[in-house]
Amino acid sequence: MLKKLRISNFALIEEVKVNFPVNLAIVTGETGAGKSIFLEALSLVLGARADVGVLQDKTKKCVVEAEFDLGNYSLKDFFKDNEVDYEAQSILRREINPEGKSRAFINDSPVTLSVLKQLGEKLVDVHSQHETLMLNESVFQFDVIDSMASCLPLFQQYKKQFLFLNQKKKQLAGLEEQELQAKKDLDYYQYLFNELEEVDFNAGDLKTLEEESASLENAEFIKSGLLKSAAIISEDESNLLTSLALVKQQLQQLSKYGETYKTLSEKAQSLYIELKEFSSDILDTESTINYNPSKLEEINSKLDKLNRLLKKHNAKTEEELISIKSEIETKLQQFGSLETEIEKAKKEIEFIKKELHQIATELNKKRTEAIPSLEKDIKAILSNLSMPNANFKVELELLNDFGTFGLNAIKFLFSANKGSDFKELHKVASGGELSRLMLSIKSIMATKKALPTIIFDEIDTGVSGDVADKIGQILLGMSEKMQVISITHLPQIASKGKFHLFVYKNDNNEKTISHIKELNKDERVVEIAKMLSTGNPTASAIKNAKDLLSAN
Image 1: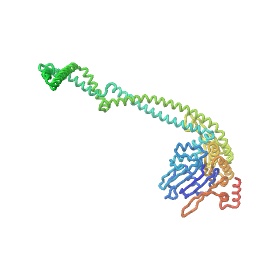
Image 2: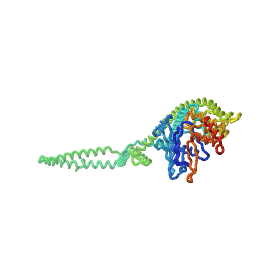
Image 3: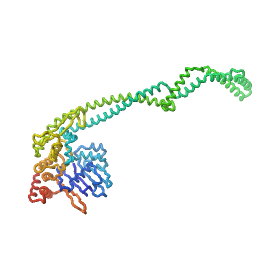
Image 4: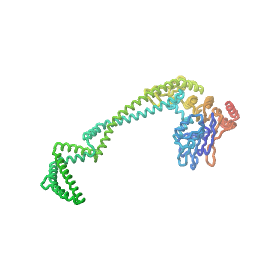
């Protein structure tokens, strides 16, 4: 509940500090005194947007600070999820500097405006005349029926699964789009892969093939050169081996004359053996060389294919071409895995749909069961508020597919007069009727979905006399279960509160300043008497004011 509110440099307010009681607090004041400013300041600290225009003194920052008692409310998880220190007595603060920059704090920890607003919605329900428009909104209507049906946790479970379903559907759509594109590319990539696979190449093949091609194309010339080389070494009359044999013989004769000559002799022997083997190698190589036109054609064909592939794929080496082939192979494998992922996603979606259907069916059942009681209770309250012929109806439609609120669509229907047809609220209900209907709904919801604080901004619009007194009784009853703050201009309602704030303004140094003060017992009598009178309070108005206060 709201315990304290401090407003500094906001609109017509210089500095105001207000303490609030647990139960019913009343806020009154003349038109234009600043009651709406008080509400705007509170809305600011609850996360509403604002700009530099709210600063009364443009050279100073605006500060609105609200202290709440959260001890009896389950909000620890919210603080934990948003990484803010939880305190049973928590302070929300909003600052706007002269440059228009806004800052938000929870227990002195900086937070985003979104987080502040989320917490504010959990702490205070502000009902203004504008809020009656919510009666026509599905979000509000489902909140009402789910509160009555005690299925808000079930609906939260549905929302979570529904969000998960939409995420999975989006994921499936992405996979199917990839598959569609992959199908367009599949034949092309398969052709590229087959073309690369057909050549069957490895790193270094290009050089080898070029050498083999050159060897076959020049086979006769190479064969002739090898034979001539072998002849020079071992077959001509004056061949190298014969000459080297003579050298070897001479050095062998000298070897007995010292180590130097022996070493030379051994080298000659070694050279003779190597030269003889070299000649043999040349002849062996020559014997392997044969002109083979078909083999040459085969090598040149592969060489041509490999060169074309290098050019086609803008590759410089076989290694780059192998890498490109691997990438294409991966894409082909991914196409197969896409089909597997799509089937998996479809199965997951069907499973989620099955779970959702169970939850949505249970929601529909609970909502349907809660409707008669809601309609009966609201009709009874409306009758008590001098609308004996008013009828309220909830139309719950069962849908064929999942929606934001389950398998249901909803309409609140209203009939103000006996024999009138039910129609949607915005088509038949007046402002006063909508205010009374909203109050009826809020009073019922207070028993099912209590908030720490609820604020009514002139809920009494369009009513007076006995109806106003009954509205006051409803507010008083609600305040037994929660903190209620009512901004009103009717004495019947003002007299119900145990705590009365009076908003007024005066001129100070050519400036108009709004003030808020708590009224004591005598001041309350005067204020309510003024509300009963058209001018200065008469003696009878004073007596009536005392009677109203004593009755409560």
